Length: 299
Image (cartoon, rainbow, N blue to C red):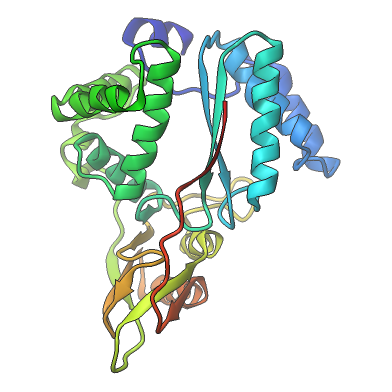
């Protein structure tokens, strides 16, 4: 993974027996000692892999909200501050951005669906909030690395990287070097897909509605009910199922309009997911403000 990063400029990796092996042991210990949510131990786990891999510049996205491990902004800021402090003590430039995960980021929830959405974002066609987060984090990295003096210049570099096609080409190199099927990037049908598509619609009525609240954890649970996640170790995962949101918190919808589409393998699966979505999505007859994506920055 380190060699690939040096050769091609991109790599995806995680904890292994060769990279921060003690972290795996420590995490297993935390799991049975009710210390999984210990902020100092989370910070140690996050940072050890970055430092062990040789990172000399670290940008961290710390999520907060119903769909995140840190369920409040305050807890997320505390974790972000701890992570940055670890970096300072190790004399490494570390920046953390606290971002909203009360509702899902982007529109897609589910393995294949999220991969497709990521590819579309590299084509410059991704959801607005996902694109904005990529620009915000990318600009911070470029400025910290000294490649631009301000955010506008940094964002211009990122924009050119996407519009020129270089970002997508780099992703193809990454997939190829890590043993993936590059052809699937241009032909989504090569990825696992679901058999059915069923819409979840807003209530019928006489006037417009707004999405008052969208619970990210409940949306994830809807996907899990269809097999997108495990209930216990060893359970199979269905990569094709999931949910695509058409409206999010603050979005205006007409009565009966499709708010989300469920991708399921059977009608029984879809019914389970639709029932959970009815808990996840709350409507209002009054306009609702769109929540801020970036909640805080710790530099």
